[in-house]
Image: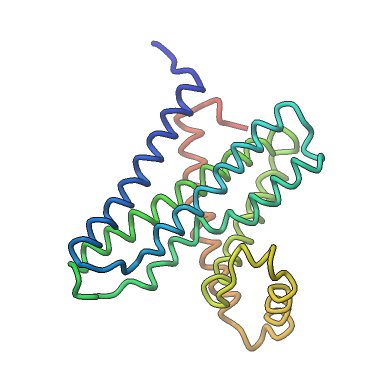
Length: 227
């Protein structure tokens, strides 16, 4: 049987991801025309941000072929990937905006949100998988799995920070003091903010369970993916 080359597989995957994202955008465009409204336009911006972790992870993967991870450029790429990764998963939380606007069918909007959430999760999990594989090549499997679990836990917390505290990734660069103060206040007065733990753990459980399923699925059908 003819085996598809890795580069060809990567191109095919990239095309599939682009087409899937374009489908989501087309759904939004059709809604905007039919309902004469740009309601939910933020989904497009959030989807654009969801692409950044994958691009950063791919760039990091290519760099690690010839450079060590403990190199300032590699570490910067890693930090940027970690900072932007929650944006991919954040699209799931956009369902809080869903309501019957009477502009189009509510069922249409459900499909619209599901499409964007699917793409966000897909982009995020592929980027996590790329980094996970690089970790497995550098450290023990158990340690690599723990690192990825910690990354998903941080992503769950970042979703809480973004959704409940209304901070975003750009604040890490432009208002780090304010962001640090807001987060530290939540931990110092954690008893007054029980939702912090609930929301963080709920999203962590969701992300971890989905990623574990995807990881096992890949290992079953792609033997070379096993650690």
